[in-house]
Image 1: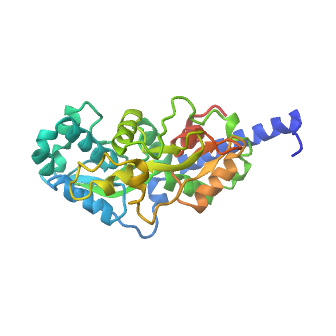
Image 2: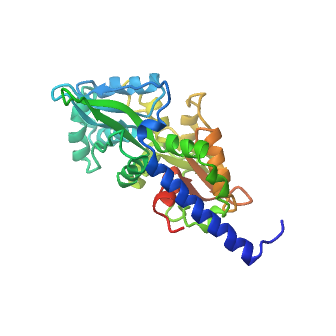
Image 3: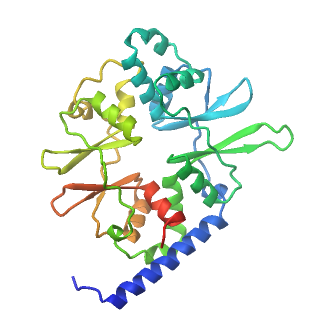
Length: 323
């Protein structure tokens, strides 16, 4: 491949800066309502529901989160995610004598469990759907979440209404479909400072699942890449994979290895997506447009894992990056 001249590099950098500014303006001009599809499914769970039953609801509907509703106050009560179930697992392993409590735990009791093990409690951040899409993106970055509930209010009764849950994936896909400027994002991602490379967590096929759960919690991530002894990326273990293992309230089957656990993975697993430092953000956005992707694992020419590029990293660059 022919080496670019300094002038060509400068022109690409200028075009990318203008493209990012244009995308940022686009996000400020649209609302969360604009992103919602014509038809969609929404699952809202009452806080009086047992945790183990809510787990079955998520698995049966192949979803990773659900807004909670407090019927006593008729108000939104937070967003239930896979992290909350993993926190319950952590609590059980710290207090094996309290399985009866865990088995009868209701969703409104999660805050006490999470308080007991010293982790972040249920995410209660939300945004009004008529606010600029830019605001919703900022809220997600501030709460370090890949999704945020949209909460409206009835004009007459002033009761809250759960409209939907907006995800970073849906936003970036919306951008890739509606902003032609994404084709001008021609700088290699390795030059943008958006790849997470330091203190990266990973595991092997022989790693016990309970150890991976510890990694997910400590690092505050939703997946852990799996490598071989040479650091070559071979798969990924996700927080959602844990849910299948604890279905029905079974929390004592987590000493098995990651390799064994993957044998039980659902057939609809979306796969592992990779990229290199030389890939351009335009091609990354094009892949997001075509496939349901939540992160890219960055590899070198030999397939060795060198970093992770998340949707949060991309969104932060578009909203706040020094372009």
